[in-house]
Image (cartoon, rainbow, N blue to C red; front, side, top):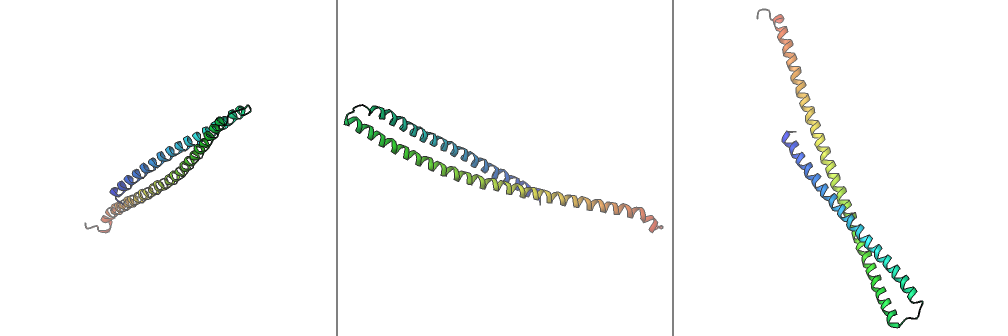
Length: 156
C-alpha cells in the first residue's frame, strides 16, 4: 500500500469522524428537545392538578352555572394541551431514537475505517521490514562473498 493510499484512508477517517461528531451533536440536541417537551408536559399536568384542587374547593360553596361552564371549558382545553404535549414528547422520543441509530451507524463506520487504516499501516510496515531484512541479508551475502572471493579465486 502506498503512502498516498494511506493518506486517502486518513482523509476518509477524518470525514467519518466529522460525520460521527455531527450525529452526536444532533442526538444531544434531540435529547434536549425531548427533555424540554417532557418538562413542559409535566408542568401542564401539575397545573391541571392544582387547577382541579383549587376549583374543587371553590365548588364546595354555591357557584353559578356560568362559572362552572368556564371551569369545564378551560379544563377541557387544558386536557387537550396535555394530550398534544404528550404527542410532542412522543415525537421527540422517536427523533432521539433515530438520532441514536444514526450515531451508532456513524460510530461503526469510524471504527471500520480506523481498523482498515490500522491494518494497511501494519501491512505496509511489514513490507518495509521484509524489504529491509532482504536488503540486509543481501548485503551480508555480498560481504561474505567479497571476503571469500580471494580465497576461492586466488589469481584475482
